[in-house]
Image (tube, rainbow, N blue to C red; front, side, top):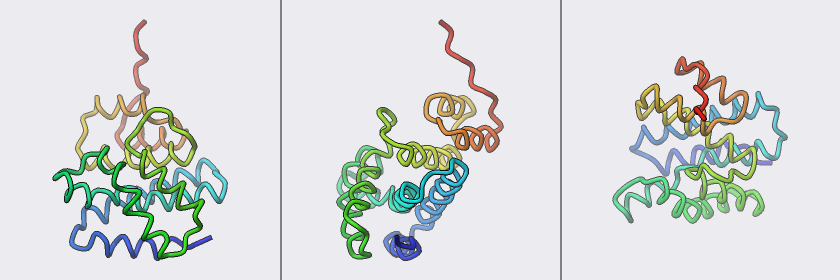
Length: 171
């Protein structure tokens, strides 16, 4: 399997002049890697997850050009086509590219999550976005209740934001 350092360098070049986006991808990558470690996922799934974490927001630049925004659905729509040539250039195996592009194409879709790699990518992105977007305690508690599923992701969210267990819905 590849070492993702070259892909990180490609993404730094891709986002040259945009330190916020570069730091975002590195933070998501770090959280994804940490959660994968603690959840003890298999090596191939972890590699796919970490690769996807590096390129998960690659569609933002094209979304800004095409739509004038960085809407999550636009990122999902445009991201896979932006990632494929970069991953091919670096000789990633086609099945890896396919799954990474599938994850890019659904990292803002929070229903029907179809694998631990997808769940962890979403959690890692949420951990970073909750902080970067200055989400309220109530919003964080809602995300904790509705999005987070891994033991590690839940623990990180609770500890980072000092959130207690979410209150269950009243019936």
